[in-house]
Image 1 (spheres, helix red, strand yellow):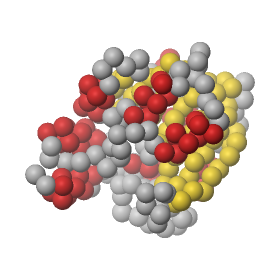
Image 2: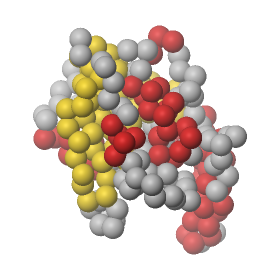
Image 3: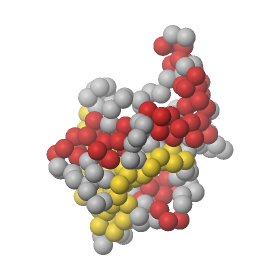
Length: 222
């Protein structure tokens, strides 16, 4: 099967995302990619550039600290955080994604697990010193953004950090997703009484200059 056929199958599967089943399409996509009939658009084989740059600029050392990757996919972001010394948990709603990530990184220290952002383990509440959310919220229909944002924020430990990477959408602009990029007001919704915004960056995507991305750092007060 050629690359154009795989990309067409990816688009067909993604079109199945809807308000009744906002995340079910991920398992179908990862299963199809595993069999070679679809492609994973976000499979770079390397950590997200905006994560790698942020950890380098801030000289992040995860020793003695915990991290979680939301919607971990095939594990490159999680492996990067583990390499920095974090005790890293990585979860995805797709069992096939989790299995594939584990196979791709044999001997990894990352705890890969299947979990639903809307039904997280109770002991994960406020449990992680660093939470990385990249493109997961925007992969769901807009009606699910608010509860997904709350769920992501619930993972941050006291004095912990949340780093969010997302594509941008102008307020009031309708899009046919997925993805459904985040507006400035949706980015602002990550901030709560306990979770304060440290920085909001408006960045041009290096690989696709027509796309602008948010990189947002938030900190939970102790």
